[in-house]
Amino acid sequence: MNLQLLRNATQMLTVNGKTILIDPMLAPKGSYDAFQNTGNSIKNPLIDLPVTESELQQLITKTDAVLLTHIHLDHWDTVAQQLLPKDITLFCQPSNVEVIRQAGFTNVTPIDNELTWNDIQIIRTGGQHGTGEIGKKMGIVSGYVIKYKQDTLYIAGDTIWCDEVQKALNQYQPTHIVLNGGGARFITGDAIVMTIDDIITVCNYAPQAKVYIVHLDAVNHGKESRADIKKALKTQDLASRCFVPTDGERFI
Image (cartoon, rainbow, N blue to C red; front, side):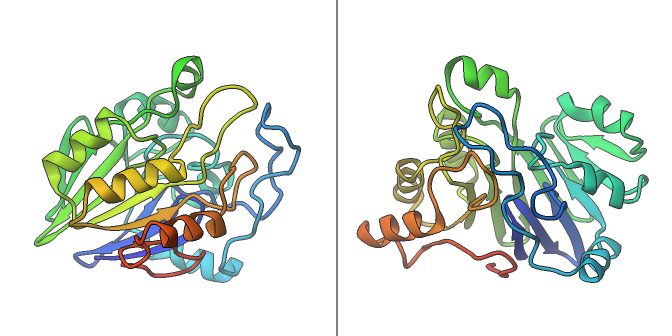
């Protein structure tokens, strides 16, 4: 497996000769209004992609499938929907199928529990995109365990530390874990993705795995930066197996 971070949660996974585009947010910097009720009005995304327009087109051309954890704007944006071929193979959680099809995509496959595609096993896991009323409003989200030969990759998705994450770690014992960090939150309510404390909890709970933190410094409701997370990991002596990749970096 090879995994490259583009920006936010957008990643390119290469496995068994196939390229899977995960949670594409492909718009240029400042294309969208700020998420509301977050305490600032900075337009999203906060930064540009680490590739040129022509390089982005090349990435899309070589993409064999798209994998969506959910369809919030910062994981499935308007530009991605415009640029991607409407007949591309697209995997998603069952609750999002109709909306994606309504956008014109014709080859949409829901992952109820698991499926195998080109000898790659993809297993859907649960999560909690926040707590209380905020969590309910954020809706259903998924993570995925991707298995090929001896490698097991767990992409947790937009979730806090919760029973569903703990269950996935127990059941699948991943060798690599990707967490969406940044502690994003609204003016009221708790964080809706992993905070530094959540990240440290995962690292300590899964000492067999290498952990990578993405979903950083790209959207206006993020509260914890790459620098904040790196400092905390160093303080906890976790920097040797928990990493914070930069945009564009290949990290597996």
